[in-house]
Image 1: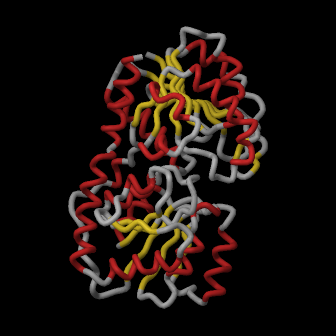
Image 2 (image 1 turned 45 degrees about the horizontal axis):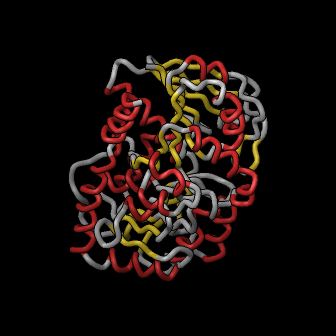
Image 3 (image 1 turned 30 degrees about the horizontal axis):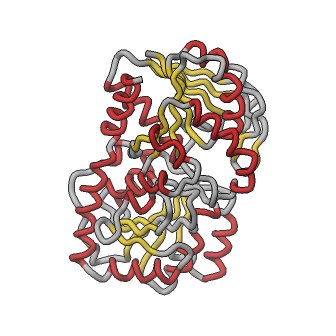
Length: 369
């Protein structure tokens, strides 16, 4: 069976969707010798050349990518797409990816015998891309009409979508997974001889809400490591300087997988302070939980509070509230019993989101189609 994955970016680009597709194709290949993949994406850096690499049963094809707008590749041509649709049995598209969806709609209708899966990663209505919904949603509805199966990554993502309610019979929930290299087998103990090490990992964009986390740690006996890069970097660095907490906050811009693994192990508490549903799932929560880190996240109409559960593996707070983040930090760091309970529960919860479980679910779906 031959399957093409259509995704905006792919490894080594670091991001939630990118890591999920990497885990998906590698996991399915590990489970089955009868499937091969082609991953078709943009290059995550400006490029005027098409790049093709082959890793066993996985072929990665990255298209020429000359221009970007707010991290979105403004690529108006995907010349390999028609041929890829013709050559593959299943077309697996990862939404949202506007420039690809225009071309997919154009070509897929010419191949009635091809199966189409759409994995719905996020609802755009509360994101910075909501302004294009008037023009974008009619295109998406036509693709959803054509789709054989629509995958959502959490029940909350389906419930919060106005569009998907019309396609209930096609919906299937397959949660995302974390990379197995982050997994450990025992909980963490509350540190008693040093400051708590707080951690944020992610692209530094407005919807991540990192500014509220920075403001929350003033005068607390904690240190904060921020791992990531993005358009908010300089703004956040200036905010740290203005608040006089440079000694408490460390920025790490481009951590390798090995470096990030060490950072998770050295940290005590993970915080994902996202402020809207552009944060659709938060795979980084799982990476932290697999390392025994309790999580502070936010109440969003997305998979974020579905991943780490309030008062089980951490604390869920109201978005855009430094005061609530601060209160949650204090509650966790002051209680040895609560910290260690959350740590053990985080590991238990992360076991529901392994790459093996996700890959087997997709393998079953591919075989059914």
